[in-house]
Length: 357
Image 1 (cartoon, rainbow, N blue to C red):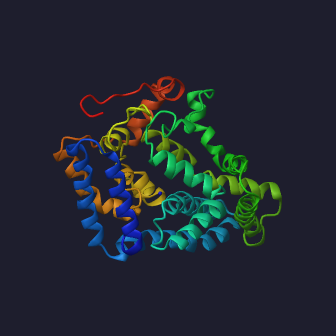
Image 2 (image 1 turned 120 degrees about the vertical axis):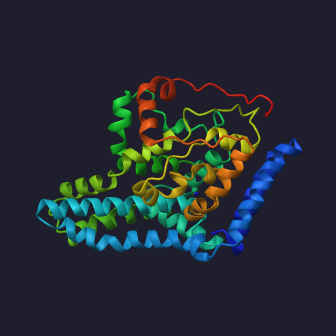
Image 3 (image 1 turned 30 degrees about the vertical axis):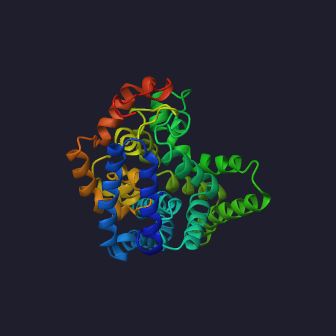
């Protein structure tokens, strides 16, 4: 289920610099990441709080502000207002649970570490129906630290080889709202009881709050219709959510845990950007759509800051003859539909970058 000035930017800059330093070995190879890091740090230092965090916080606030209207529209007996209510509720839910949880998992919503932890629990557990600790571990400590490394961050959790391609790509994602809390419960095994109780209470609070509001504000009469409406709204963006998660890594070079390339080569070869898309960029966040390469190189940057440094990063990578991979949503969807067995069923081949590893 990831501000960058003051304390927040210092942490983000140090994280990027540390990652670059960890690339180690080979002064030229290490210096590429260090040079790019300095260029990005310069952009961050010259950015206002509004650019670093304010814009993304405003988008999340707008999503919460739209919820009262959505609940009222869902109470209409007419088809058009009800459909509009589903669209508003589903879009607000996607912004909060995808963009919000992603930023919160990376601590990009606050320059305070303590507040960062609060936002992580709120967005991931209350809003996203998942456990914050497991979500952050899987996404930040595994996926980001070991991007496209076989057995560690190779996106294998998204593979369900027993499903036919049509079911996986177009039907199974609709079950994400049901599967998510069930997986969260499974992730609590072996955790301390305090964490388990907190997660169960927070997830229950989020689910019951929407259920209660649909009954008492929207006027739903039966539990069945209420639950169906919850599922409909929460599943509205499930298809593009699953698609985006597999399109931007699977099918790209995968690396051996013992022979991984330096960080800048790992991220430029193993990550792909989708083109700007007004709906998905603002709903999921730039860092998940059009700035995914920038996000993997500098994971503590907010969505807007990833967009701001995108010209710097893309120009630098192209000047240094490094890949800057981009492809359209439709092109990736066609690729995965045509090569589903190769990409989603069989084990991926290991790539070795000659002269780099």
